[in-house]
Figure 1 (cartoon, helix red, strand yellow):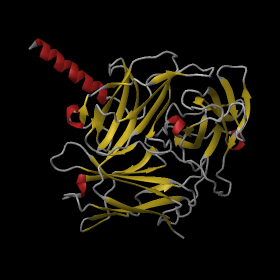
Figure 2 (spheres, rainbow, N blue to C red; figure 1 turned 90 degrees about the horizontal axis):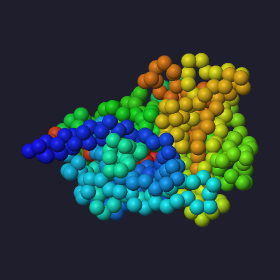
Figure 3 (cartoon, rainbow, N blue to C red; figure 1 turned 90 degrees about the vertical axis):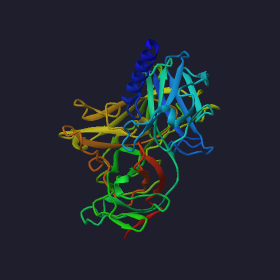
Figure 4 (cartoon, rainbow, N blue to C red; figure 1 turned 120 degrees about the vertical axis):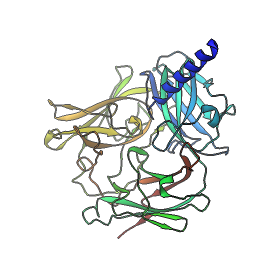
Length: 426
């Protein structure tokens, strides 16, 4: 009985520790360049189809320079990313934790790191329910030593979603915003009330300004129509900026200079300025996605260098934004408005600066401002980039369903639409 009580306490403690983990967080300062994406496609959401042969690639580097024992597990979550009230043995088939056994030391590089990678899910640890999952990676089989977490999605396609991008009905937003109108056919589901469903709409894989908690405007037989005048309206922004760092020897058009006297090298990106007063110009961008790549070696994952990359933003008249913080947003900062993306104002030079340790590759990013006092305020591009209806953006619609007998939200439909291909407007 004593042993059983101890095991029960340890199991409860493990559950409590896992419940505290936040999505897309890096807890260890030595962990860099965490990537989770569909196999062979770095510019993709970590999305799997339930009971399919699809796989995700996981990559990350440990800058400590020596191999360590990393383990991983999956945590089933609800649509709002709170932990689902489901026992781990009910949603994982096989072992509930696994060791990451595939790693190798960096080679032909001055930066010493250990690169870890895996194809998920592995045969001995398979999620068997659809929904939101947190991939938790931790040290020494101890969940009290988290390394990082990453969002992943598993969909069981039971609904069809039709969507299009339109100009908003509001004349004040007509030329600066984009509105998503969509309908969901729930023929295969037993939906007795819209309260059983929930919707999340993402712009360019950004969870910080996702639209959620909206209800259908109309219900026509088994079709839910989402067309509220104020629902799903996004600031259009402008095409993302870029920094081509695939080579540290060849300086691309966005690199100002490279200081090779330091290890790792210092790379200074040309000063960025406000674009809100410039006319819209279309060019093909990557909507915030990064790609680890190099022109100087065979394998970009363990044969590429790191550098301290310095970003500089010059506001109008070199004056700081009153009452607002400035953030550098993109996959390289996990698309999060927080300390990792906060830029510092240099009063002497009249510019904002940010330094990130980045691996060789191609990076796309944008600048946003947010009210410094109101934490619930949304990040905006109006002051830094401007908003233009014509901007090319990618939108992802996630549809969740919970039956009356279920204890978690199932992900039953996903669709992605591009504003250039699916736009309906003037």
